[in-house]
Length: 394
Image (cartoon, rainbow, N blue to C red; front, side, top):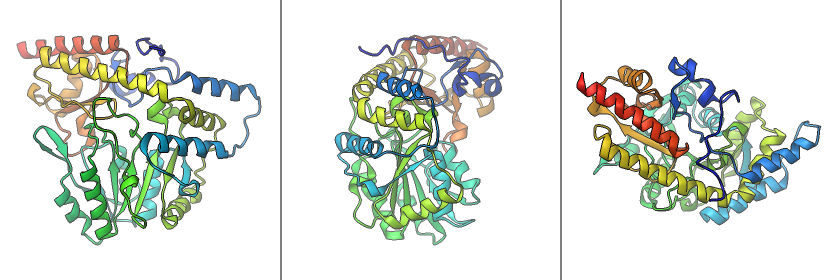
């Protein structure tokens, strides 16, 4: 392996949310942090070299988005996702979450509805609520041990005249589904029928396991005129979320203009010279690193699933198809949500995201981040095993 994913990086003291916010979030600094969705792996060497090279020039002024930046992204999605993007479809943005906030303002009025599919990434809720829009839930359903969309209910939600927008999470955080072509085509059919604008958050598009079906970009199934915008970023792909640069892609110029108007009203321009360098270097030179990283995370996934099956049967999990996140069903432990979080922190010494923060369907669950050296995961699982054994003996 060219990249030492087994290496334990010391991230304390780097202003890392995942590590340096443990005391504020969990009440103690010594929990093993398996929560925030970044990994504990060193980014591709090409990105570090690009940042060092840029830092050597001592002027860090206002920065343009060069043509080469767009070209790197367009080349990446053509080569890895069979998606042909035209330059004028792209608008750079200061992150996917700011894009959700801007989209809520651009495509729904105050009090109008935005559909989400919980359990889902918490900013899907907050970006709607904080902009004065109304959350409309289309909860995922579990069939045969696998999460699926309730498409009939989605159509019913979309039929309401004051529902204007759908936030789609694809691949889905936290349940790890990589939506099938048939599911995505059904979403587009519903959107067309009800003039429902779709913001497809595909930030995890590159994080699909080698033993699973490939991710399908929703835009590759769209027809001209479909009300669709796609949010993408190299941040999860190459572990550079702190760079804060993403992109929005829309074939329809009117949709991109509406979104641009919101960004421009708040002067939301992301022209950091380092984020530009990292973005381009990742898409230009990060493919081999990504393949090795996903092989490693796949092995982490299999290790955790095997450990739980053999030694933690009270916690169940369906193997994810994408993302480096695991959705743990802890309901057999018999604890309420507050006690469940407290149990993992105080008794097991492991910091994870409580499922209740992901909305409907999240009660009794926890989200675990697989993006750490295997030795760290092994230690966390052994501590959980000890805590569960003690709990069952009480």
